[in-house]
Amino acid sequence: MDPETTRRQLVLFRSAVVGIIAAIALGAMAFALAPLFDAVGVYISPAGLLAPVIGQLIPSKVVDRLVPGDGAPAGVLFILVCTILFLGHCLRSAVPHRL
Image (cartoon, rainbow, N blue to C red; front, side, top):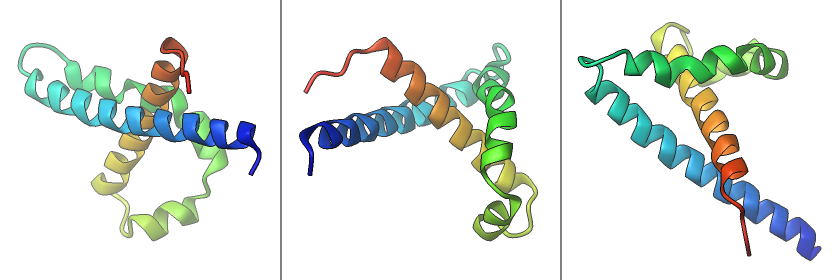
């Protein structure tokens, strides 16, 4: 494999891992701090930003296969995916990656 391709894959993997860890940590903090202020609203705000983009890219059949019956589990999955993508992108942009 090309070294540049390997480097890009590693950066993408690191961004995904950092986004997942940050999303879980911030989600836990948001629910813990919910009595103090609207932390949950801040946590789910990336879903509002990314909904138009993801709605065009992912067909509804995929969501129906992942979460049959729709409802709350589909919403939680959507919020988590949007938060992971948003935080992964933000943190990747803020922190230079060096191999």
